[in-house]
Amino acid sequence: MQLDDLLQRYFATTDLSGVAPDTLSAGIEHCRVDLGLEEDRGKRFALWSFLHMFGSAPDLDVAFENEEDREAARNFMDLLAASQGDGAG
Image 1 (cartoon, rainbow, N blue to C red):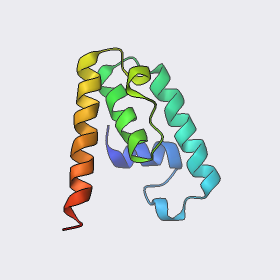
Image 2: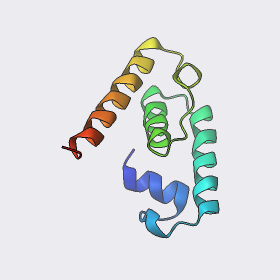
Image 3: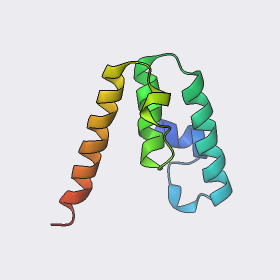
Image 4: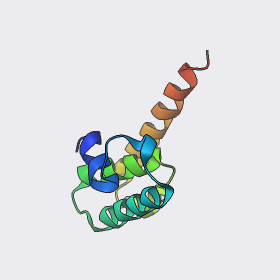
């Protein structure tokens, strides 16, 4: 899954600057539904990560049955938090 493809699929654009709040909300909800239906572990992780970046990801125990997937998600969150901290210093 490519970021541009996900943005186009859920928000009908790759430029979020012009997306109306209702469109953003509907796209996030559509992605949450797709996450719930997705059975492929890699695709589930990609969708969860995408939702996490929008602050809309479900809790790890809800999103992932497998502990390895939950740990990978924790690592992703840690890396993302660390990268956001790099710009401050």
